Every structure is written in C-alpha cells, then in structure tokens.
Length: 246
Picture 1 (cartoon, rainbow, N blue to C red):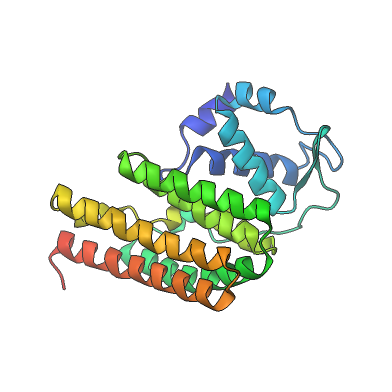
Picture 2: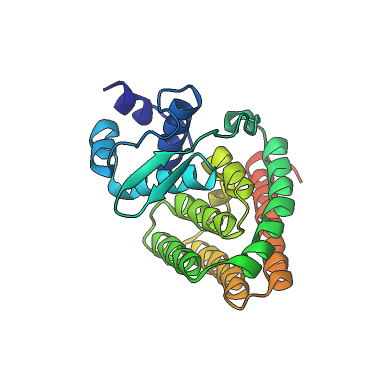
C-alpha cells in the first residue's frame, strides 16, 4: 500500500516508469535488494505498485541501462554486484524557473547530440526496432491528443540506451519528464496551429531516427541539435507569449 501511495503521489511531471525505476533503484542502493538477489516477477511488481506491465518493463530497462540489474532470459532479473557507488546529484525538482528550463535544454543539446551520434554508430537491430516503436507511439499519442510528452521522453531515452554508454540513459532517466518542457502548448492558438506543431515535432523526430537508421553519426548529431535547439526556441517563445515579455 505504501508503494502504491508513493507512485500515486509522484513528483509532478514524472512518468510512472521513471518513478518506479527510482523506487527500485533506491531499494538497491540502500541494500533492501542485495547484490545477486532476484527481483520480484513482473506480475508481483505490477500488483505491489499498481502499475501496468509496460511501466514495469520500462523501469527494468532503465535499471539495466544504469548498470544496477541484469536480466537472464527465461530466469529473471538480478541485482548486479557492486552497483555504482554514486549517481548524478542534480534533482529534477530543482528545475523550476524559465531560466533553469532553458539551461536544461542547453545541457540536453550537448548531451543528446553526442548520444545520437553514438547511437547511429553503435545501435543494434533490436535497439533500432525499440526506437521505431517509441517514435510510432509518440506520433500516435500526438495524433490522438494523448500524453505526447511522456512518449517524447521515451523516444529520447531509447536513443540514449542505443548509445552503448550506460551513463547517457542514467542521466536522461534521472531527470525524467522534467526535461520535457510542457509550456510549449501555449503556442497553440488554433487547431491548425496545433496540427502544424505536431507535424513539425514528428518531422524532427523522423529526421533523427532516419540518421540513426542510416548509421550516420554526424547527421544524427546534427538533427538532434536542431531538434533540441528548436525546442529551446519554442519554449522561450511560449514563455514570452505568457508573460508578454520579448
């Protein structure tokens, strides 16, 4: 019941999968789950935390990327010996102001452009399929008026995972949904504006995916930099419209 309550009162902006991953990660770091110990089954975690199987799998994927667990096919998921002694200390809830969000986007431009380049050079076919699925889900959510921001985050996380360097997804997962500006919706003045915005986002994501598909690191980095620079500019414009400041 306590775990379910924790998830239902999660920090604003965080996805269930991010919150569950952080909960399990904390259990590992404080020794509640010992090195070599097998994690509960997906069904058990679903029942305990009141979440879906997809949420559990995304959380486990995040733990794998962070180097905290390993999954043995047909056997289960186990806590690794000697998990990282420390982790990124900046907290997602310390990004409250407009200037802080803009600074975060600048940080993401540098971080994720390199991650995209590495993903283009190192991605496996399985990772490419996962990235395509994340992009399809993002586009579907945008078309249907669903939680596009969460699917947007998953797309970027899949790219970080495909980099082959566990620190990229570790940082992306740690910040979670707080790194996806939500104020951009203030740009929508009409259904036509919203449709154009959705098409633009979809096109930018497709360009990044296409470069990774073609195994072109320079192009992947370029398109990621353009995408995140545009996100920064859109967020700044949205804030100016809200505050009336140019």
